[in-house]
Amino acid sequence: MRIGFGYDVHRFAEGRELWLGGIKIPHHKGLLGHSDADVLIHSVCDALLGAASLGDIGKHFPDTDPGYKGIDSKILLAETRNLVASAGYKIQNIDATIALQVPKIAPYIEMMQITLSRILEIEVGQISVKASTTERLGFEGREEGVSAYAVVLLEN
Ligand SMILES: [Zn+2]
Image 1: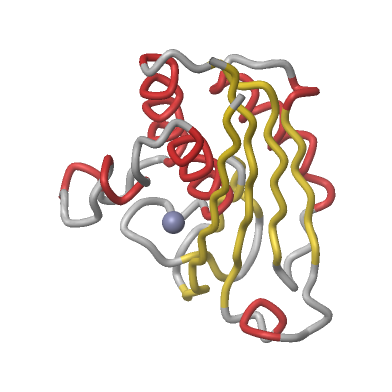
Image 2 (image 1 turned 120 degrees about the vertical axis):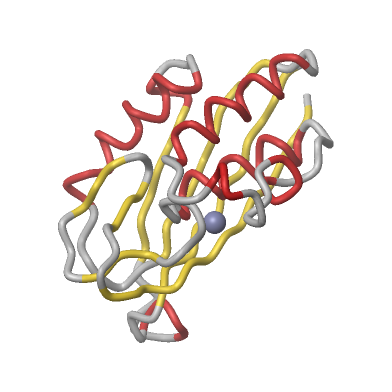
């Protein structure tokens, strides 16, 4: 058994789409990044890579590579799944938390879990996604950005 932890942050920007957990969420701002800036997927990728001691998302998908510009993070997650599987690991479970003040994402959580489980080829019950506001404290609370945390358990 190997545990992994991932953390990511992206700032809000005008004129961007908001993608979280592979789902496009209606909002007047989106997250800024080289890819689609799906902060939840990025934290899950880092947790998976970390558990397998395979480095991090920046090592495998550098933001200096024009090939990853605007890329759908679901593709990065599928590639990460392949890397972890090639290293001989199977996903036991994933638990993730998104910290954001706005918008309300509760209606989208189940769809995120379904979407991520399909990409990772695991059961929906093996992935938990939660959301938390930060009580208006910090950059998330000031609606400047979104952070995400993920832990994953891999089995050899
Ligand atoms: Zn990111």
